[in-house]
Image (cartoon, rainbow, N blue to C red; front, side, top):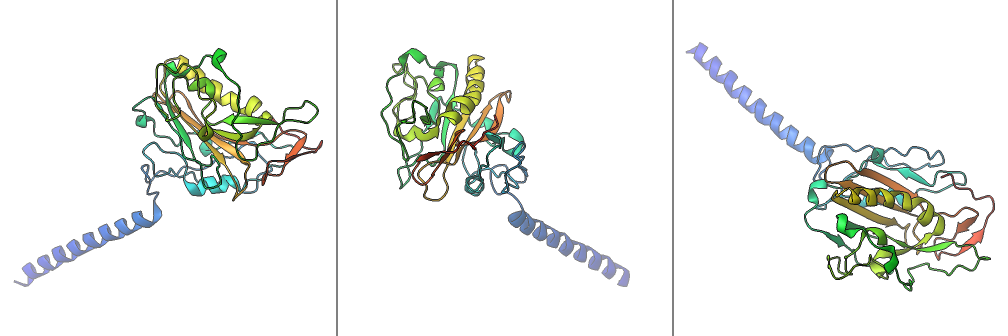
Length: 286
């Protein structure tokens, strides 16, 4: 009888030990993991080529969205980056890997976020794009929307300001201002307040176009692409400090994640109101 009693005691003790291990693992997962759709994946930030940056993102966590993107805390970290003369015009985020979910591509459309309480485009616009969205440049019209911190270019003919499109005109043919595809609308997105922010001419024409051309190339190859653009504002400033661009194709062939500084060689901006001042010492490394 004693021998049988000892066997039951060991089995009972082992059962309680197993239950305790399970409880510990559950609690550990609750407090140590990423609770996003990609829970458990540690996405380490890689800010290469920007030696002047003093604030870095230790990990890029995926936002709680059906299609991914960065978390609010990571956008906040980007907003605290200070550009210093001689630095790189852009830096890569998350080892240049998108945090978008490629399987989220379902319908050809653009999700335009509403303006915030300061009338800024401070939230992400996300396009689910395909080949028919490559636009015809001949259908462009005059721009008249004035985003926050907008100023007209009156610096001896030097262009400082651009109306920066979050989702580029060149990849949004057929998309109406509600974000739906309309075959009768042959032009790309133009005078849409939800898709414009005050951007430096340098950032728009020399840097952002690099990544927009990658998206266009993938679309022309008949790839389906998710493309997301998020202007990054610091506090209540009316001019964005920069813009986060991400894209991924459903076949994984296109994949990037970058942050562009909203800067202009030879000038410095007051980001509270967008006013520019001449500073010949301001250099931007492309």
